[in-house]
Image (tube, helix red, strand yellow):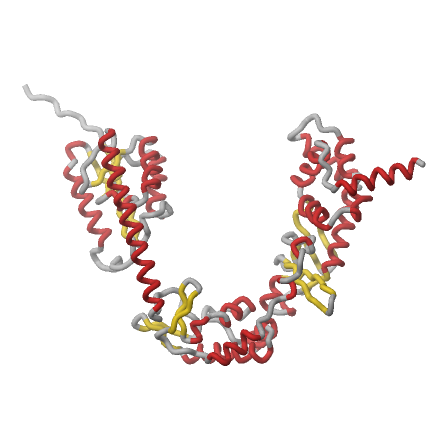
Length: 451
């Protein structure tokens, strides 16, 4: 009697391939194709077990096996989580990962979704303890191999840079690469010499950047020249004919664009900014990080020394890069804008509407909060503001104010709801946001008022 055919469950197999470098990927038949062909042949040999190939390709070309941040691998994990894959097939274990820790994370995903892992050139079964031990040993060697290769590459780059060779990377303005060597590109080299000559004469990156923009000089990508580009250019020792590696410079194989005298003239004028040596400048800028100009760009604190006095300004980022004409309000005196913001803040803290709003927000976390407790938290701040140390004033402003926007017609303040809630919590816990000397001042004033 003829036996009925045995039904075999379908097993969906996904092939994952990887190559660490992009070399050879443009060939008609590359390493990824070879890996896939071998894996597909193995899946076909398991047809009797119900193995079928999923149509999606999971190929990572030019990506290291020491990280999980790989596009194709992420797609594969997502499909596994959605239940689209039953078996992951690779040519060798190190194609999936060269990191023992990363592979442990992948195995955790496989186990959670009941997915089997197969390496067609290394036979083992991950469902047994011996199979897992074998897997860990193989992965340890793969990780060791990756680290050794990395050390060899770093040593080779360091030795090559010490010999003055060009080892790749962003090609500096004024040069081009031919046969792995830097050669001068005369049209751009003229711009480099012009920048150094202007800087040696003017001693101001802002003025030089403005002059170059007016003359239509642009970077290689077609962007206007700003101060950041200038400082990066005049500090690049490649233009002296040197090769730099990890802070050390060596005589390079390429030709210099400028001479040592011009380099020295430029760098003799790069003195320290007065704000770099100003003690306590961290606490001088009350609105650091929260003030913005009319164009939406951040404004940074800058200091200018005249005689023995130091003046603080908030300067728009566009002005720093593109000059004073790039923004309607390029800079504002720190004292004026800080006074205006503090006056507005103190006025807001006195309004009943803000007290009620803060009370309602605080009650979302603590329903025992009373309105009079919120009022008690806010009322002492107004009369005692001038008694606080600058550091404490800055802490309160940063706690309560989320954003300060300067416009041509005024100043707008955006309060930080979380900060208001935190302030109330501080006061309720009897940890006032003011130093002890301020608390004693309150007591003295209340005593004088009573008498």
